[in-house]
Image 1 (cartoon, rainbow over the protein chains, first blue to last red):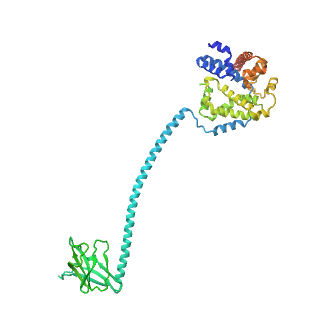
Image 2: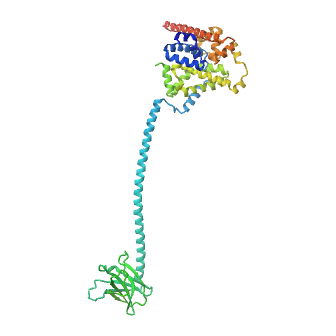
Image 3: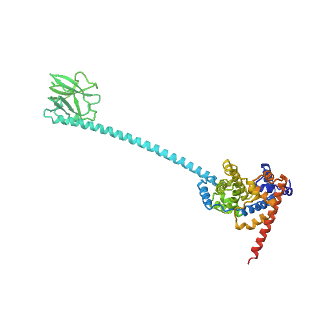
Length: 257
Length: 187
C-alpha cells in the first residue's frame, strides 16, 4: 500500500482514536515503521485530538495528585532501566564473591581456633591430671607426716649389711606397731646395680619373710610396706629376679627394730 | 530530544517529579474523558488514580514510535473508564441511558480557560462530525457501535471521522497561526 492511499483510507485517524482492530493496528504499525512520513501525519491527527481533549479538560479534585504520587512512591521502584539492572547484576556478583571469600576466611579461622583450642584443652587436661597427682601426693605426705609425728613411731635405719663402716648407703623404715604401719623412706636409697632388684624383708624369729619389692621408680619417696607385727628386723637384698626370690640372695642393708 | 522525550525518559527512571509533571500536563484532559464516560466524580477520581498508577508501572511498554504519549494515556483512561462502566456494580448505579443524554446534551462539564479558543473551534465543527468525535474518542465507542448509535452506515462513519479530523486539524492550524501572529504583534 502506498503512503497516499494509506492516508486516504483514514486508518491513521481510527488508529489515533484507539479504535483499530488488532489486524488494522498491526498494519498501521508496520506502515509507520516503513514510512517515516506517516509519523508526521499521525502526529498531526494525534495533536488535533489532544487539543480537543484539552479543550474539554476538567480539573480533577485537588487531593488526587498527592494521593497518586504517594501511592507511586510507595510502590518499590524495583524494575529500573536495563542499565541499572546490569549494574545490579554486577554488584550482586561482587557481593556473592565477597560473601564466599568471607565465609572461607571465617571457616579457616574457625578451624585454626578449633585446633588451638583443642591443644589448649589437652594442655589443661594434662595440668588437671598433674594437679590431681599432686593432691594425691599431698594427701599421702600428710599421712606420712601423721605417721612420723605419732609417738609410737620408730625410725629404723637400715645400714650396710657387710658392716664395712661407711654409712653412705642407708634407708629408713618408719615402723609403728600401734598403728600397724610400716613405711620405707627410699629417699636415700640409691638405684640397684644393673640387672639387680631390691627386695624387702622382715626378719621374724630369725627367718626372712618377703615383704615385696622395693619400688624406686615412683614419684613417691615413701613406700608403704606390709605390716608384720612380729618383725624383729628389716633387710633389703639385691635379687636377680624383678619379682623377687623366696629367700634373699645378697643382703645389702639390715636394721634392727 | 524534545521535552516529551525527556519526560518519558525520566518516567522510565522512576522519577517522581516526572510523574508530577505528567499529572500537571494531562490530568485535566484525562479526567474530562473519564468523567464523560463514568459520569460520577467519585468514580472518575478512582479511575483517574488507577490510570496514572498504571501508566507509572507500565511506562516501559510505551513505544514512542507507535504514537504520542497522550494517545497512549487516553487509551488507558478510556479503557479503564469503560471497564468501570461495564462492571455490574456500575450498571446498578446508573440506569439512565448514557447515549441519549450525550446526543441531546453533550455534557461539557468543565471549563479550561486556556483552551476556550479550541473549545469554540470544536463547537464550530458540524454537528454530525462533533457527535462522532465525542462517541469514538471520548466515549470509546467502536465505529460499528457509533454507526448504530447515530443510525448511519459504517462506511459513512469512517468518512465522517476522517472529515472531522481534517476540519479540526485545519481549524487548529489557523488557530495556532492566529495566536502566533498575535504574540508576534505584541511589542
